[in-house]
Length: 268
Image 1 (cartoon, rainbow, N blue to C red):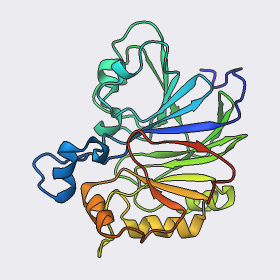
Image 2: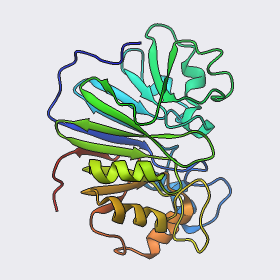
Image 3: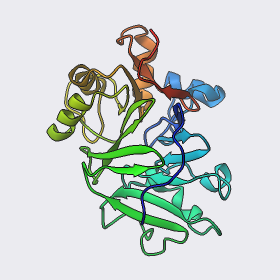
Image 4: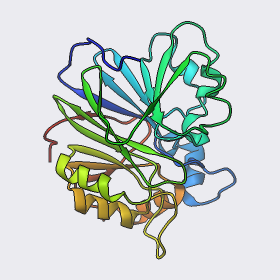
């Protein structure tokens, strides 16, 4: 399939967080921690499955598809393509009903994972799955997109987007970063880096997802102009509520529905 489009480049690249939670989300079912109890009543504290929407002009690229109501959120013709980091259910579950739609065929880019998830590849419906290889860049509606490998229990890719307005690295799910990915990011120098961080600082190394210690190590090694944490669990939210002001100024916590413009220079 052709991976380019004649759509004209715009001045800005916009990222909107549709979900910033880990697989359990916030509130966690049955949990009585401070954050989960508050999130039952305060929708601003809730976290849906980790996903985001990248927008240029009228063109919309969905990053991961774990939201179960994708067909309601994106009526036919309003979504142009999907990029998947990997095929765990909380990142693809929205594709299962969407695939049986009518009309527009949706290109779905992702890692070359032959298992996929369930029968998505066998019964793909309107979804056109396209496998990507690490560090093999391609053009997508005026964006240069470079997939980079991450460290997870399933084959997983992060994505580096380069546009006239700035550079965005979207890196979830991962625990640490592979040496080649770290080296690439150090040379590439993202303006905005969105990084997985599910846990507060831990005494023992976490599995599958970063804790705050690993996230801060990546921040110090890469030095992006701005970094936002996503794929957040309720334990980290509790820690953050008790440690306000402890993070570097250029490091923030993503929230569901938050929108940010990717710029070469971020304001102080």
